[in-house]
Length: 367
Image 1 (cartoon, rainbow, N blue to C red):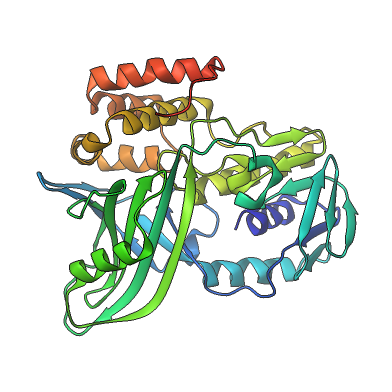
Image 2: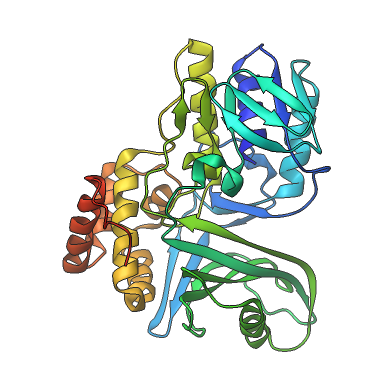
Protein backbone atom coordinates (compact mmCIF):
# COMPACT_ATOMS: atom_id res chain seq x y z
CA UNK A 1 0.00 0.00 0.00
CA UNK A 2 2.74 2.46 0.88
CA UNK A 3 4.70 1.83 -2.33
CA UNK A 4 1.70 2.29 -4.60
CA UNK A 5 0.53 5.30 -2.59
CA UNK A 6 3.90 7.00 -2.98
CA UNK A 7 4.06 6.21 -6.71
CA UNK A 8 0.60 7.72 -7.21
CA UNK A 9 1.59 10.79 -5.16
CA UNK A 10 4.72 11.25 -7.29
CA UNK A 11 2.69 11.10 -10.52
CA UNK A 12 0.00 13.46 -9.20
CA UNK A 13 2.61 15.95 -8.02
CA UNK A 14 4.21 16.06 -11.44
CA UNK A 15 7.43 14.11 -10.94
CA UNK A 16 8.75 13.23 -14.42
CA UNK A 17 11.77 11.12 -13.50
CA UNK A 18 11.55 7.36 -13.95
CA UNK A 19 9.69 5.62 -11.12
CA UNK A 20 10.39 1.90 -10.67
CA UNK A 21 8.26 -0.23 -8.34
CA UNK A 22 9.79 -3.55 -7.27
CA UNK A 23 7.57 -6.11 -5.54
CA UNK A 24 8.07 -9.78 -4.72
CA UNK A 25 4.41 -10.55 -5.35
CA UNK A 26 3.29 -11.89 -8.71
CA UNK A 27 -0.20 -10.38 -8.69
CA UNK A 28 -2.37 -7.95 -6.77
CA UNK A 29 -5.49 -9.40 -5.23
CA UNK A 30 -7.67 -9.05 -2.18
CA UNK A 31 -5.38 -9.70 0.77
CA UNK A 32 -6.30 -7.14 3.46
CA UNK A 33 -8.46 -4.16 4.35
CA UNK A 34 -7.64 -0.68 5.59
CA UNK A 35 -9.78 1.51 7.78
CA UNK A 36 -9.50 5.08 8.94
CA UNK A 37 -11.67 8.10 9.62
CA UNK A 38 -12.60 10.17 6.59
CA UNK A 39 -10.87 13.54 6.36
CA UNK A 40 -11.01 16.28 3.71
CA UNK A 41 -8.70 15.58 0.78
CA UNK A 42 -7.77 12.04 1.83
CA UNK A 43 -6.53 10.21 -1.30
CA UNK A 44 -8.53 7.15 -2.36
CA UNK A 45 -11.44 8.06 -0.07
CA UNK A 46 -13.78 7.55 -3.02
CA UNK A 47 -12.97 3.83 -2.86
CA UNK A 48 -14.62 3.42 0.54
CA UNK A 49 -17.69 1.25 0.02
CA UNK A 50 -18.66 1.20 3.68
CA UNK A 51 -18.94 4.08 6.16
CA UNK A 52 -19.99 4.10 9.78
CA UNK A 53 -20.93 7.38 11.41
CA UNK A 54 -20.94 5.78 14.86
CA UNK A 55 -18.52 3.45 16.64
CA UNK A 56 -18.74 1.54 19.92
CA UNK A 57 -16.32 0.42 22.60
CA UNK A 58 -17.83 -2.24 24.87
CA UNK A 59 -16.50 -3.56 28.17
CA UNK A 60 -17.90 -5.59 31.04
CA UNK A 61 -18.77 -2.27 32.66
CA UNK A 62 -20.81 -0.83 29.80
CA UNK A 63 -20.62 0.67 26.34
CA UNK A 64 -19.61 4.03 24.90
CA UNK A 65 -20.55 5.32 21.45
CA UNK A 66 -18.78 7.98 19.43
CA UNK A 67 -20.49 9.70 16.51
CA UNK A 68 -19.40 12.03 13.72
CA UNK A 69 -21.53 13.15 10.80
CA UNK A 70 -18.57 14.70 8.97
CA UNK A 71 -15.78 12.18 9.69
CA UNK A 72 -17.19 8.66 9.43
CA UNK A 73 -15.15 5.52 9.95
CA UNK A 74 -14.43 4.10 6.49
CA UNK A 75 -13.33 0.77 5.02
CA UNK A 76 -11.20 0.38 1.88
CA UNK A 77 -10.76 -3.06 0.37
CA UNK A 78 -7.27 -3.80 -0.89
CA UNK A 79 -8.57 -5.18 -4.20
CA UNK A 80 -10.25 -1.85 -4.96
CA UNK A 81 -7.19 0.12 -3.87
CA UNK A 82 -4.78 -1.95 -5.94
CA UNK A 83 -6.98 -1.72 -9.03
CA UNK A 84 -7.38 2.06 -8.79
CA UNK A 85 -3.69 2.73 -8.09
CA UNK A 86 -2.44 0.39 -10.81
CA UNK A 87 -4.85 1.84 -13.37
CA UNK A 88 -3.59 5.35 -12.64
CA UNK A 89 0.05 4.28 -12.74
CA UNK A 90 -0.48 2.37 -15.98
CA UNK A 91 -1.34 5.70 -17.64
CA UNK A 92 1.94 7.25 -16.48
CA UNK A 93 4.72 6.48 -19.00
CA UNK A 94 7.50 7.13 -16.48
CA UNK A 95 6.31 4.34 -14.14
CA UNK A 96 7.56 0.74 -14.42
CA UNK A 97 6.14 -2.09 -12.31
CA UNK A 98 8.47 -5.07 -11.76
CA UNK A 99 6.80 -8.05 -10.08
CA UNK A 100 8.21 -11.38 -8.90
CA UNK A 101 11.41 -9.59 -7.88
CA UNK A 102 12.85 -9.75 -4.37
CA UNK A 103 15.02 -7.14 -2.69
CA UNK A 104 18.00 -8.69 -0.90
CA UNK A 105 19.92 -5.59 0.19
CA UNK A 106 19.27 -1.88 0.55
CA UNK A 107 22.07 0.71 0.52
CA UNK A 108 22.46 4.46 0.20
CA UNK A 109 20.95 5.12 -3.22
CA UNK A 110 20.86 1.52 -4.41
CA UNK A 111 19.11 -1.81 -3.96
CA UNK A 112 20.15 -5.31 -4.93
CA UNK A 113 17.28 -7.42 -6.22
CA UNK A 114 16.91 -10.95 -7.52
CA UNK A 115 17.12 -9.49 -11.04
CA UNK A 116 19.99 -7.05 -10.64
CA UNK A 117 21.02 -3.77 -9.05
CA UNK A 118 19.01 -0.54 -9.18
CA UNK A 119 20.39 2.90 -8.39
CA UNK A 120 18.56 6.12 -7.63
CA UNK A 121 16.58 7.61 -4.78
CA UNK A 122 15.34 4.62 -2.80
CA UNK A 123 12.04 4.43 -0.90
CA UNK A 124 12.02 1.30 1.27
CA UNK A 125 8.49 -0.05 1.71
CA UNK A 126 9.50 -3.55 2.79
CA UNK A 127 7.55 -3.29 6.07
CA UNK A 128 8.66 -5.93 8.61
CA UNK A 129 11.11 -7.31 6.04
CA UNK A 130 13.01 -4.03 5.88
CA UNK A 131 16.65 -3.93 7.01
CA UNK A 132 15.68 -0.69 8.73
CA UNK A 133 13.45 -2.58 11.19
CA UNK A 134 15.57 -5.64 11.89
CA UNK A 135 17.27 -4.02 14.87
CA UNK A 136 14.24 -2.10 16.08
CA UNK A 137 12.84 -3.14 19.46
CA UNK A 138 9.20 -4.22 19.19
CA UNK A 139 7.48 -3.83 22.55
CA UNK A 140 4.07 -5.28 21.69
CA UNK A 141 2.31 -6.81 18.70
CA UNK A 142 -1.21 -6.06 17.58
CA UNK A 143 -2.17 -9.39 16.04
CA UNK A 144 -5.52 -10.41 14.58
CA UNK A 145 -7.52 -13.13 12.89
CA UNK A 146 -10.63 -12.00 11.04
CA UNK A 147 -13.55 -13.65 9.26
CA UNK A 148 -15.89 -11.99 6.82
CA UNK A 149 -19.13 -13.86 7.34
CA UNK A 150 -22.61 -14.18 5.88
CA UNK A 151 -25.30 -15.03 8.41
CA UNK A 152 -28.59 -16.83 7.89
CA UNK A 153 -30.50 -14.21 9.87
CA UNK A 154 -29.96 -10.44 10.30
CA UNK A 155 -27.92 -9.76 13.42
CA UNK A 156 -25.79 -6.63 12.80
CA UNK A 157 -26.43 -2.90 12.98
CA UNK A 158 -25.00 -1.58 9.68
CA UNK A 159 -24.53 2.04 10.82
CA UNK A 160 -22.34 1.24 13.84
CA UNK A 161 -18.81 -0.20 13.88
CA UNK A 162 -17.58 -1.96 17.00
CA UNK A 163 -13.97 -0.87 17.43
CA UNK A 164 -13.43 -2.92 20.56
CA UNK A 165 -15.58 -5.42 22.43
CA UNK A 166 -13.54 -6.58 25.41
CA UNK A 167 -16.04 -9.20 26.60
CA UNK A 168 -13.71 -12.04 25.66
CA UNK A 169 -11.02 -13.91 27.55
CA UNK A 170 -8.10 -11.67 28.51
CA UNK A 171 -5.67 -14.58 28.65
CA UNK A 172 -2.40 -14.06 26.72
CA UNK A 173 -2.76 -10.28 26.39
CA UNK A 174 -5.33 -7.52 26.05
CA UNK A 175 -7.95 -9.05 23.75
CA UNK A 176 -11.02 -7.69 21.99
CA UNK A 177 -13.37 -8.29 19.07
CA UNK A 178 -13.60 -5.83 16.19
CA UNK A 179 -16.81 -5.86 14.14
CA UNK A 180 -17.51 -4.05 10.86
CA UNK A 181 -21.12 -4.67 9.74
CA UNK A 182 -21.48 -4.37 5.96
CA UNK A 183 -25.16 -5.34 6.03
CA UNK A 184 -27.59 -6.75 8.61
CA UNK A 185 -26.44 -10.24 7.62
CA UNK A 186 -22.79 -9.65 6.65
CA UNK A 187 -19.80 -8.41 8.63
CA UNK A 188 -16.07 -8.61 9.20
CA UNK A 189 -15.38 -9.94 12.70
CA UNK A 190 -11.81 -10.00 14.03
CA UNK A 191 -10.22 -11.26 17.20
CA UNK A 192 -7.41 -8.84 18.07
CA UNK A 193 -4.76 -8.88 20.79
CA UNK A 194 -2.21 -6.43 22.14
CA UNK A 195 0.62 -8.50 23.59
CA UNK A 196 4.20 -9.64 23.16
CA UNK A 197 2.93 -13.00 21.99
CA UNK A 198 -0.84 -13.20 22.01
CA UNK A 199 -3.28 -16.11 21.85
CA UNK A 200 -2.66 -19.07 19.57
CA UNK A 201 -4.68 -19.37 16.38
CA UNK A 202 -7.03 -22.01 17.79
CA UNK A 203 -7.88 -19.74 20.74
CA UNK A 204 -8.78 -16.90 18.38
CA UNK A 205 -10.95 -19.25 16.34
CA UNK A 206 -12.67 -20.45 19.52
CA UNK A 207 -13.41 -16.86 20.57
CA UNK A 208 -14.85 -16.03 17.15
CA UNK A 209 -17.04 -19.14 17.14
CA UNK A 210 -18.29 -18.35 20.64
CA UNK A 211 -19.23 -14.82 19.59
CA UNK A 212 -20.91 -15.83 16.33
CA UNK A 213 -22.81 -18.88 17.56
CA UNK A 214 -24.63 -20.76 14.80
CA UNK A 215 -25.90 -19.94 11.35
CA UNK A 216 -23.06 -18.29 9.47
CA UNK A 217 -20.69 -18.95 6.57
CA UNK A 218 -17.08 -17.75 6.38
CA UNK A 219 -16.57 -15.91 3.08
CA UNK A 220 -13.05 -14.65 3.58
CA UNK A 221 -10.29 -14.83 6.20
CA UNK A 222 -7.51 -12.38 6.93
CA UNK A 223 -4.83 -12.25 9.57
CA UNK A 224 -1.74 -10.26 10.40
CA UNK A 225 0.33 -8.56 13.05
CA UNK A 226 1.43 -4.97 13.49
CA UNK A 227 4.41 -3.72 15.52
CA UNK A 228 3.77 -1.40 18.46
CA UNK A 229 6.93 0.17 19.80
CA UNK A 230 8.18 3.18 21.70
CA UNK A 231 11.45 2.99 19.77
CA UNK A 232 11.90 5.83 17.25
CA UNK A 233 11.60 4.80 13.59
CA UNK A 234 13.12 7.54 11.44
CA UNK A 235 11.92 7.80 7.85
CA UNK A 236 15.07 9.36 6.40
CA UNK A 237 17.77 6.67 6.60
CA UNK A 238 20.53 8.22 4.49
CA UNK A 239 20.81 10.99 1.88
CA UNK A 240 19.41 8.81 -0.91
CA UNK A 241 17.40 6.21 0.98
CA UNK A 242 14.09 6.88 2.64
CA UNK A 243 11.68 4.48 4.37
CA UNK A 244 7.92 4.47 3.93
CA UNK A 245 4.98 2.61 5.43
CA UNK A 246 5.71 0.40 8.44
CA UNK A 247 9.47 0.63 7.79
CA UNK A 248 9.26 4.42 7.93
CA UNK A 249 7.16 4.74 11.09
CA UNK A 250 3.89 5.43 9.27
CA UNK A 251 2.07 2.88 11.41
CA UNK A 252 0.57 4.65 14.42
CA UNK A 253 2.17 2.65 17.25
CA UNK A 254 -0.62 3.18 19.75
CA UNK A 255 -3.44 2.07 17.45
CA UNK A 256 -2.13 0.22 14.40
CA UNK A 257 -3.78 2.65 11.97
CA UNK A 258 -1.62 3.58 8.99
CA UNK A 259 -3.70 4.49 5.94
CA UNK A 260 -4.11 8.22 6.62
CA UNK A 261 -0.51 8.68 7.76
CA UNK A 262 0.84 6.83 4.70
CA UNK A 263 -1.11 9.15 2.41
CA UNK A 264 0.15 12.27 4.21
CA UNK A 265 3.73 11.00 4.24
CA UNK A 266 3.57 10.10 0.54
CA UNK A 267 2.33 13.57 -0.36
CA UNK A 268 5.06 15.21 1.75
CA UNK A 269 7.77 13.13 0.06
CA UNK A 270 6.44 13.99 -3.40
CA UNK A 271 6.35 17.71 -2.59
CA UNK A 272 9.91 17.57 -1.28
CA UNK A 273 11.16 15.87 -4.44
CA UNK A 274 9.52 18.48 -6.66
CA UNK A 275 11.02 21.26 -4.53
CA UNK A 276 14.48 19.65 -4.58
CA UNK A 277 14.47 19.22 -0.82
CA UNK A 278 15.17 16.16 1.37
CA UNK A 279 12.06 14.15 2.34
CA UNK A 280 10.67 14.53 5.86
CA UNK A 281 12.74 12.89 8.57
CA UNK A 282 9.71 11.27 10.19
CA UNK A 283 6.18 10.18 9.35
CA UNK A 284 3.68 11.86 11.66
CA UNK A 285 4.00 14.73 14.09
CA UNK A 286 6.53 14.55 16.95
CA UNK A 287 3.90 15.50 19.53
CA UNK A 288 1.77 12.53 18.49
CA UNK A 289 4.80 10.25 18.81
CA UNK A 290 5.22 11.51 22.38
CA UNK A 291 1.56 10.82 23.19
CA UNK A 292 1.80 7.35 21.65
CA UNK A 293 4.91 6.65 23.73
CA UNK A 294 3.10 7.61 26.93
CA UNK A 295 0.09 5.53 25.95
CA UNK A 296 2.15 2.40 25.31
CA UNK A 297 3.98 2.75 28.62
CA UNK A 298 0.68 3.07 30.46
CA UNK A 299 -0.72 0.04 28.61
CA UNK A 300 2.32 -2.08 29.43
CA UNK A 301 2.30 -1.09 33.11
CA UNK A 302 -1.43 -1.61 33.74
CA UNK A 303 -2.92 -3.69 30.91
CA UNK A 304 -5.92 -4.69 33.01
CA UNK A 305 -7.15 -1.06 33.02
CA UNK A 306 -6.90 -0.55 29.25
CA UNK A 307 -10.48 -1.55 28.37
CA UNK A 308 -12.21 0.85 30.74
CA UNK A 309 -9.82 3.67 29.92
CA UNK A 310 -10.48 3.35 26.22
CA UNK A 311 -14.23 3.22 26.82
CA UNK A 312 -13.92 6.40 28.88
CA UNK A 313 -11.96 8.02 26.07
CA UNK A 314 -14.75 7.39 23.56
CA UNK A 315 -17.34 8.46 26.12
CA UNK A 316 -15.74 11.80 27.01
CA UNK A 317 -14.08 12.96 23.79
CA UNK A 318 -16.46 14.40 21.15
CA UNK A 319 -16.71 12.22 18.04
CA UNK A 320 -15.16 14.73 15.64
CA UNK A 321 -12.20 15.34 17.95
CA UNK A 322 -11.73 11.59 18.48
CA UNK A 323 -11.80 10.98 14.72
CA UNK A 324 -9.24 13.71 14.09
CA UNK A 325 -6.98 12.35 16.82
CA UNK A 326 -7.12 8.80 15.51
CA UNK A 327 -6.38 9.85 11.92
CA UNK A 328 -3.45 12.24 12.53
CA UNK A 329 -5.59 15.33 11.98
CA UNK A 330 -5.86 16.46 15.60
CA UNK A 331 -5.42 19.98 16.88
CA UNK A 332 -3.75 20.79 20.21
CA UNK A 333 -7.25 21.32 21.60
CA UNK A 334 -8.27 17.82 20.50
CA UNK A 335 -5.18 16.37 22.16
CA UNK A 336 -5.93 18.30 25.35
CA UNK A 337 -9.39 16.71 25.37
CA UNK A 338 -7.88 13.26 24.98
CA UNK A 339 -5.46 13.84 27.85
CA UNK A 340 -8.23 15.25 30.06
CA UNK A 341 -10.30 12.10 29.50
CA UNK A 342 -7.58 9.84 30.89
CA UNK A 343 -6.61 9.36 34.56
CA UNK A 344 -3.83 11.73 35.56
CA UNK A 345 -1.60 9.74 37.91
CA UNK A 346 -0.84 6.61 35.86
CA UNK A 347 -0.28 8.64 32.71
CA UNK A 348 2.07 11.02 34.51
CA UNK A 349 4.08 7.98 35.61
CA UNK A 350 4.07 6.74 32.02
CA UNK A 351 5.14 10.18 30.80
CA UNK A 352 8.12 10.05 33.12
CA UNK A 353 9.08 6.63 31.78
CA UNK A 354 8.66 7.89 28.22
CA UNK A 355 10.95 10.83 28.99
CA UNK A 356 13.68 8.37 29.99
CA UNK A 357 13.24 6.65 26.64
CA UNK A 358 13.58 9.99 24.84
CA UNK A 359 16.92 10.55 26.58
CA UNK A 360 18.15 7.20 25.33
CA UNK A 361 17.85 5.28 28.60
CA UNK A 362 19.16 1.76 27.79
CA UNK A 363 16.56 0.30 30.15
CA UNK A 364 13.71 2.13 28.47
CA UNK A 365 11.96 -0.89 26.99
CA UNK A 366 8.43 -1.58 28.13
CA UNK A 367 8.28 -3.89 31.10
